[in-house]
Length: 251
Length: 281
Figure 1: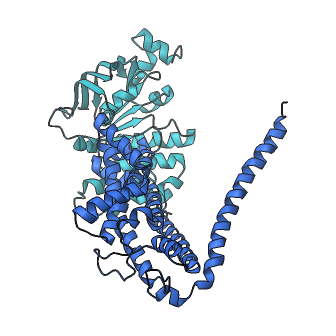
Figure 2: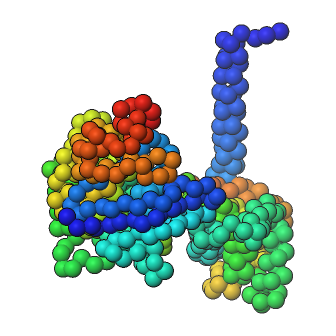
């Protein structure tokens, strides 16, 4: 598969504190890449550089490049809004808007204002179906998204992302606030979604990384320690630190 | 002597319960007193007749009610967009430097300045320099200056408590900063903004000092923004100080209280309906 997105020598600073050092990583199309590592290792910060979410945090600085289809998204003439439409994001805590289910999903298309002849109803239904939520909410589209269960809320957030027709989906520990059954549903959904999208997931849960991903990157102290095919990382890690982490010696 | 936890628990309960009861009692007493002394003078004539003005205290309050409504509507129409706009600027756009801090400090200080100072300012600027004379326009502009700090503070507080996760969700979906403010931040802050408007309406209806020197006190029916006039509370003041029509002052007070209750109920109802519509039910 082709390379959809890649970073080269990416470093990131919060004020004086360096959070990422020289991270170079490639993400393949229609595959799931998992980023693992202990708390504070920089994996979430790294994920947020991929759709320029860190731009919203004051006093931060970035060095290096992030290429999406070989275009640097941090180039001076890059359009941050266009980048975020191509690189959608699902957050750790389900964060639906305090609006109806329909208006949550319709939010992105309404903001960008181009439906290309497809009606908003169709976009909403299609996105909810793709997020495996349609059957559960089709009779309550105009009820608040906040009355759904946590797992349903997270799938609503995924549907909301799908509605903007992204090419890459970033997931920042999407299941950490969910119970095992809701987690399983999201993981099944990811397998469906990867047929169409490039997915990058940050997870605290190594079993999850092993279950869902084809590629795994291990972060420690802001550095990418090891990167490779998930099976190899988990069965035959090349680096002692990786081995220590996945066998549970620290983290 | 040390009190046992059980005793302190009881004492705290008595103190808290007591202050609640006392507060409600004082409130009911004031409202009850005004109603008891005012209701007897209430009649359709009182509502629909023009006050005689001057020292007589005769007549009704028709022109006063109309003037109050004009003044409140105009004031809110000025103070809401300005206050919300300034609050958005301060909380979302202004960078954290000494100018912003100075502006915020100024806003907070102005919120504590006595209203008669605003009245003198309004008299000097709107009545005299700008030649709006004693008029609803002068009164509204002065009131707007008085209420602006309140509106800004209340709106800014309600914008601040909109969760970061909501803003990030919107930005991550490719919404611009302004779209995020318009479609996510402001709707979530709306209950707070409504509260600010209610506060402002209440203060506008109740304010006398700064209107005393900008509104004129004419008892005639206002015909334009440049007409003078008197609001209910100003009329109440004239009745109580210049005439012997204490019963009519109390009747005016009854109407004033009723109007405030109606406005608050109406605003709450409208905002709940709006929230139900945007949030889904």
